Image (tube, rainbow, N blue to C red; front, side, top):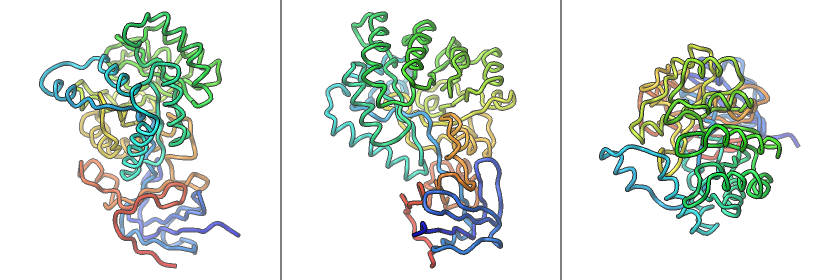
Length: 390
């Protein structure tokens, strides 16, 4: 028996991950995109959905998120908004709460955030560990993450736990902790920053992860210029994330590499820090992604549309560039070609916006514009009625 096909026609604007098409149609066959093209040439299908002139985009690909945690850091946010500066030290507050929480609590909270993301159009999400910082707490964090996504990242090197010798902790991360966590992880990540891990520690941890079969990505250059971007390029990391403070050499290195610069404007919004200069990166030929950095301390947002609006308003991106970075760019930051685009053979991750154009994501910030979401051809979020026919 063949898989059921769904035709979406009457699309006013279809953004396929690279370019925009007008008066378009799309066919999903089971879990994949089978056809895209002009509405006038649309083939028959088992089910028809009339988009009514609305816009269709690929599902957002959120390539940087920290969703397995417990506790609340409202007071820290309130203090920052009252004039205190941001440092990485607040991570330890979440570590204490996460260690004290049971598996069920952590899983429930993480699943709720994934559902929150899905309702806002995110169909692929990366989830990191990093709030356990013991062998067992990192392992169970990743085991929970694997129940929610295929894109799981071992971030035992988030910060050095309180009252722990840094060299001893690095040996734990590269030894017993890595062995326990590698079966549940696809990626290895390090927060290469003042107050976290230095150049030598970062390289050692990433190389150990690579040797264990994990793929590298790096928290790089968030608070200051530093070695993070250079190490990411040196080790062919899929992405260097944050990229807020970059030298000309950093930009040149990214432009000549396969490493994506993943920008996280929610963090700058929440910490009142300078935003990354996306215009500088794009003009230099760097591949750029946008992600939420959803976490309880420095960017507690699950909304990719919000991050798109910030990228346009604060980082010098055009609406087209921002939406591309939130879809195709995010896919490239995960080294995926099956998501973040709408083309035959790609996974049928489709978002119908209650707007005539993707530009409305930045033009109408904060407005819930997601009409319907399909992930792998299955409708996952439909807050509004659809016009459906046989």
